[in-house]
Every structure is written in C-alpha cells, then in structure tokens.
Image 1: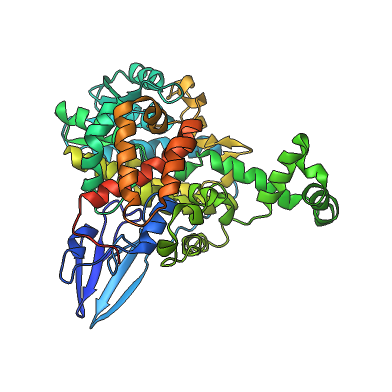
Image 2: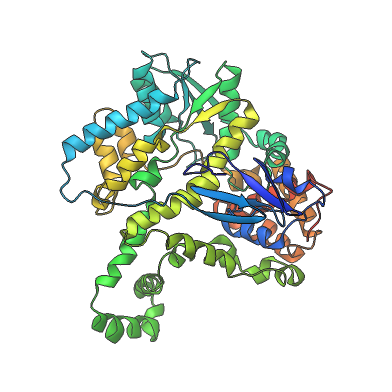
Length: 493
C-alpha cells in the first residue's frame, strides 16, 4: 500500500491477530473487535500540533501512513518506509525569464489537468495562491470561472476587498458569504464528528461554508491554492528564521566573549532596549527545528499547568519534538530554507491544511483539486534556488515576480492572511458562542485530561485579555470535546 507525496488521500492500517486491515478512516479500523481505545500520547500530540500527525492516530494500535510512504505486509511482517524523499538540486546558474515562463506554463498545465467538464470554480481568499488559481481558471475557460469567498465582520480578519479585486481582474462569477458566530455554534458539532480523529485547524469552518456555497450553486469540484507558500517560500516564519540564522555568522569570539555574557548574565539584558537583543540571542542559539516550537502554545502555557497529573504520567512530553527532529533529518544537505519547506510539506500541508480542505469539501459534498501539488510543479520547486524563494527577507520573490502583470499589484504586495477565523474575538463578544465553548471545555475537564483550574483561568482570564492568542487553545480543546462527545463508546486507554 502507498499514499501520494502529500497524503491528499488518507490510508490507515491496523494489525489484528496477524492480519492487516486497512481503510481511509482511522475510526473504521478502531471499531473492529477488539475495539481500540483512545491513546493518551495522541491527545498530547493533538494539543501540541493541533492535529495528530502520522503515523500515530488517536486510537491505540491504529496507524496512518505518512505522506510519500509505502507499507509492505508479508507473512505477518510489516515494513513502512518512504518511497520518495525530496531532493533539492538548485540551479547553479538560474535565468529568471526562462524560469518564469516555464513556471507560468506549469501552473497553467496543472490547473488544466484538474478540469473535468463540470462548472469551473475555485476558492478565492484574495491571496496570491487562490488569485492565481482564479486567473488561470478564467483564462482556460474563457471567463466562465466561478469564485467563492468567505468574509468575517471582525477587524483585522476580513480581506474580502482583495478577493473582489481578483474577481474583477479576471472577470469571474463571484460569490461571497460572511460567516457569523451563530454559524459556528450550528456547525462545530457536525464538523468535529465528521473527522476520524480530533482536528484543530480553525480554518475548517470558513472552508466548509465556502464549499457549501459552491455546492448550492451547482459546483461539484473546487480548486484550492494550497501548497504555494510551502513550495515557493511564502510563510513569514521563513524570513524570521533566516534572521535568527544570521547569528551563526557572527564570529564565535564575539558571541561567546561579549554578546552572550553581556546580555544573558548581567543586569543589562533586562533593560528595555537590550531585552530584544537578549531574546534574539536566546532564540538564535536554539537549533532548528526546535527553535520553531519556542512559541508553541502548549509549551508556553505549560503541560503541567494544562494536564492533570494522572494524564501527564501516561505520556512522553518529549516525543512530539522527537518526531519533528526525525522529519527534519530526512533532507540532509539542503539549505536551511529548503529544509523548512520540506518540514512544512509534512506538518503544515499533509497533516493540517490538506485535511482541512479535504474534510470540509467532503462534508459539503464537493470534490477538490490542488494544482500547486502537481508533480511537475513540485519538481520545478526542487530545483529553484533558495534565493529565488526568499530573496533577502522578501517572501516568495520568484513566484510574485513571475506573475507580476498577471496578478493585480494590490494582491502581490498584500500581507498574507487567508481564511483565518476570528474565533477568540467572537467568543468574547457573542454570548451563544461563549456559552458553547465554555460548556465544551468544562465537560472536557470532567474527563480527567485537563485541569479544571486551567479551564477556568483560560476562559475567564486569558481569553478576555488576549482573544487572538488564547482563542486558539479554547478552539482546539473545544473541538477535542466535541469529537469525543460524538463517540461516547470510546474510552481512554
């Protein structure tokens, strides 16, 4: 058995009595006798990653094939290994114009291969990826493309203006829907229950309403722009990590002899102006991929503060980082940027964003295609120089320059946003949503997984003070409880 490079289609397996059972969903295998229990380690992973990365699933003894892996079962023996590992072979003498022309044609071809004769349509957030999908789709279908966008009545979250710019530029049949807090209260239980294990990506709700709108309009397949950021260097953390990487270029004598003793071991480091320098050094000294988890929500809040002692005694708190280090080591010899991209192909794309889109569209009753993950485009990205992806601190420089003149300038220069959900803001303002979240979290506390005092502090102190930050923890805990409510027969191991 095998799954594709990004595990767009999921494949799970379980060995019972020397026989291999497999299915697309983990819960189908867990239901086979003897019924599989919920794994405490998987719950820890969920709170750490906001999803449960493969090969683990929420169930004891049920596994999911990682992306680009195969499983070989012979006479009771199981072998699981990668059949494809990305090899970054950067062009040593790149020429922008021919590369740009090749890229545009590859994108056009990738979109064309997704057309199936049904009404041509795509998600449109107003970002570079979805706008590129809309533009290519419109060109290939003589302006018959339909686009679907989601908005929010919350300052700093709505970017409908950019979706409208793209729709106007490409002449699409444009459709909009504004998600409300009441929509969340109505839909969260169904979304949580739909997934075969807890899933904490909050953008799943906007994606669902976008897909529902398209289905009601007669669309049977939507194209999505997922993958552009991870293939061509579009996430802000890439620039941030490059800044930290500069510290390695500082002479060791200066680092060890002056900067670190001065800022880390003297009162100077606590002064306002020097505090940022101290923080920079502390983070820069931490190697990748560990450094990318320094602001992990679970680690910042403290596992000891969140989990009950009995639950915490059943898990290995170091295992999540061990998983990441193993993935990081799979692409030796690549540049720091390309290693981050490959890391994100696993943890951002395969484990979070693609399941978000696949799950929401499946629940809405439409199919989905991901043109940016077309094999020729992925292979093209492997040979694109790192400096073309992140030029200095300019994110996805090549992508934007190659499409300059095709995409509206306003979209090329806009800040990245997407379908981010203002859940924390709404949970403070909308009584029905706040009550729903509170009831869910208090119910979860009764299961002996999280501390009752932590839930109280989270809802009554942290969430009102910093809704955007702590709203994420409220969301993932709420989705865990809603998933468990949908499966009352499942027990914790």
